[in-house]
Image (cartoon, rainbow, N blue to C red):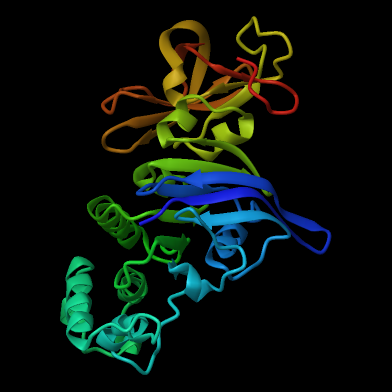
Length: 331
């Protein structure tokens, strides 16, 4: 496996700046997630690492080797796309074996058979090996697509929102499987998504992208607990962070325009009165929707709470975040 290094990567499409001097290191054996909405530059970054797009500026290194001028095949990377991109006329076995039959790899037939069986068992599709790709469900097709990357043992794995078109249960199952595969193999993963749950549950490192700029890098917990900006704070957290006028609870730091409160940063039982507007029972927790001085906010409380809409709850902020007019963190 290998480390990925991006140094000052710039890329524009016409007048649109897709990436603006992105510098990033994905350590060997890391599961790095690039997180951001559509248009943030996630897929462009992945395509530049893969060699499918060429940067206008900067350098890409994989395993210490400069690869900016190399073809995708020369880079020894495996990429999984959002769409399955299988060969419909082939069986699952043939689809999985196809990457190993490349003249560049020269893989012996017995090793191909062994590797295909191994990966099929890992992804729980061994019983489908002789089925045509067209007979599979969406989840099975995506497992085969992921399997085509896993059979190769490349230097790095690149994944472009591979779970986004699956239903909720399959997404949850494959999140666990992908994380187990990465942790067990020590492989280097660069994975892009707009889904914060994928970032929180799978990543060892998260890079937050905003309109082509890398605004923060850290572990999911670091970005959740210590965001550098309002934008970074908004990318992680469920329920979403509450963003309110900075002086809503009284004093504010100089220059602060907005106070950010995650649900656990709202202390209940003392402080000022708020009114319960909605109660959501979610099994292990209950979300409270509150109205406070004309502003709506969400917090969590005991799963067995007896609170009802119209009840009064005293609240105060606890270790809140403050942001200035540009969205930068000031406290």
